[in-house]
Length: 410
Image (tube, rainbow, N blue to C red; front, top):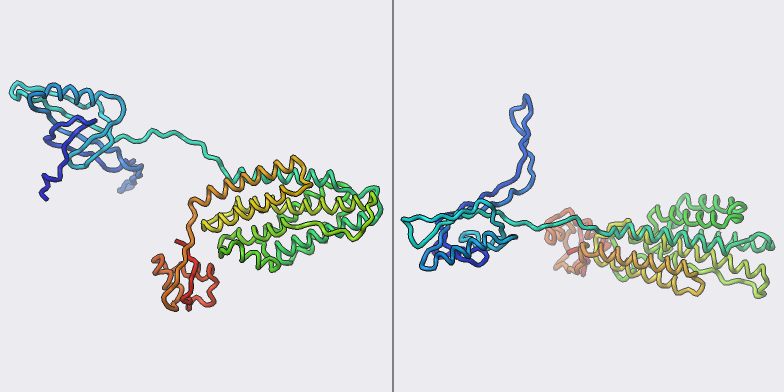
């Protein structure tokens, strides 16, 4: 095909015209910085320059005047329009003030145009965007405050027999020990935190609000170590069947395990006022532990990076389901119910929004036993990602990846 056959008929806003010649001004916008006593300047790149199109055009024929008037009207119309350029195709441009029209007595039946256009960009304004992670943290703080308030209203040992206080100490020891074992795996330092709490019960039992804040702080400190001790290994690895690589996955699974904690069944049968208060204390402490775990699970999910789509969706669904289970308990006060519902909405919105940019997991089966670096290069042209494949699929030896189905990032 000859080059003339590839030229397109020129027009602007649907008005055709002929073209004698054209120019296109393009390049980069730069700021030149020159310094004293320095031979070479520094050029700062400010982005691509606006493209400017100049055309030498004409209209000709018995109806050239009508066609001229139509083209003039198109040039003077407000806003950008569509220019069909013979060489560059369809462009969205705006006519600037350099367009000219000329007649000549020597060229009867035609008129010439000097057309000048600039590319038309999009008119954009700053747009507000909701910080969904920050909203999750705000709703988690609201639930934390409501949970502490509920506990302060229900818990009490003053004026009751000694067994009420002893029962509260036993319940506190059991609940905090469970959280420590699940979240820290019984790691070093956990027993000292529990001992410090129990040694301060005389003061804390007199101020249930302070006790609630202390329990909330303990669960936060346990979570900060990374979470996921041996007590929750099976739960952590079996979460929706997805092999989880996100740093927050195991701590989040451990926190959701703590969020299922229930008060131990009472060993007594007579419902005296003291026994009733003992049962109330036990129930209030269990609710505080569960909701503290939900608070910090939401904080962990909001602060974490989620590189895998399936993992963030699994985290969203598991956390939302655990919050739903807490709202369905019959002893949830109205304010706490609203705080739980608000937190669920914030968590779902946040993790759903962040799942959009996450990579997907796909199943790949190697044809033969091969090193992880070879498989990584075949998949990504990056041998350095071999460790990622080994870790995600728990391959026993990186030099011998078996010909079995493997989960890999797309």
